[in-house]
Image (cartoon, rainbow, N blue to C red; front, top):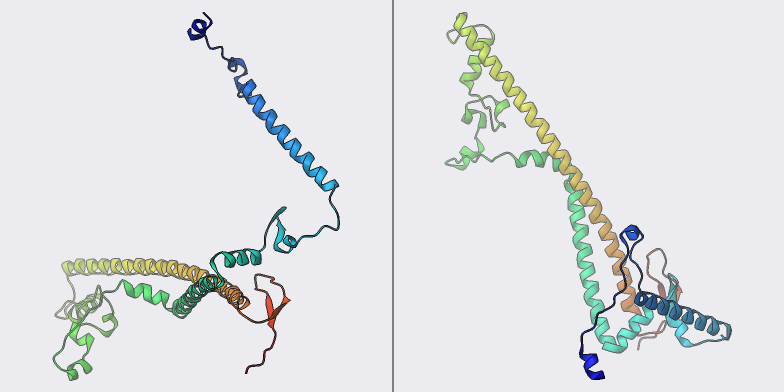
Length: 291
């Protein structure tokens, strides 16, 4: 009968949840949660007591060679860089480590030269940014001639039938006939040299309005080109500063890798100056007579 009693499904009694009136206090801790918290607390307490007991029984003259390969950083013991390099060399071999260092050194040198050359080109072309930005928007006009003599004696003003002052314009390049007509209208004369009538005066006023609109448009384009040149110049200065900083960082990395490569080589040496201010340590090798 006891087996049948165990086979019958029974009601699962659950612990109550947090009442709505106390919901602002957060999760209601159950016995399972309290047990986990208590075990964790007592485990930490036992660990602290064990460390205190070990510290009180410690020999102040205690020494082991692992002290040479560790250091305290942010309150934690960790291996030094030399110990890590030695451990890596023991695992994969000294020759493999040397090859890795050579590859890293070649990459750093390549990046340093690349940044230095880019910074030099930017430095040389900074004074041309304003002119280059304005010239980029101008389209090229290629004119073909028959012989070399024609190319040497070519006159752009005569070819475009305009004044020399308007040759460089890509827009609003009036011909000489139009310039002559405008000059006569400003003097109050028509094309035949006679005084203007009422209709001609209206034409003259319209021409003056068109000229003023062209001038305003030219001023607007000049301001737009100036803003574009200033923006491009600021961008170039930012890139120049970033390239210069990166080249300096790569130079320091190259110095560290070079020292590491030399230290891994043969020969007796001793450290004469520790690493400081981001610069690598300095070593002095014992002079050896060459046979």
